[in-house]
Length: 91
Image 1 (cartoon, one colour):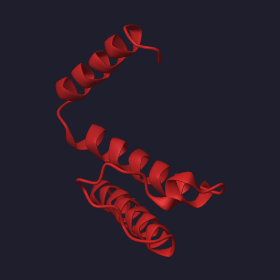
Image 2 (cartoon, helix red, strand yellow):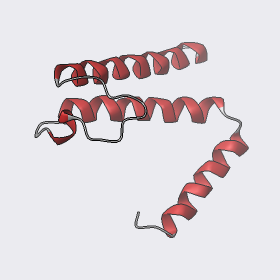
Image 3 (spheres, helix red, strand yellow):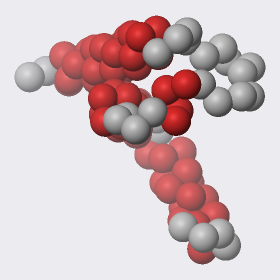
Image 4 (cartoon, helix red, strand yellow):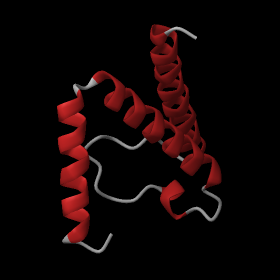
């Protein structure tokens, strides 16, 4: 698979996962707004496997896409900062 095709596949994963999450929220009420602070009915649902799967897929694909497209120094600095933050928190 060519490099561009791999990046396009990551974009497809992000898009599909986001649409899956939106559909799940719609099934349980409404899609949360970007400025919403209160919980959504789906947040308290017993079975969140489908939502968690969609979100984790989206996060993983985005992380890979970001790491691939960002300059190496940018990625290295971000990883280093996350490790330092983890040392000083309860990671």
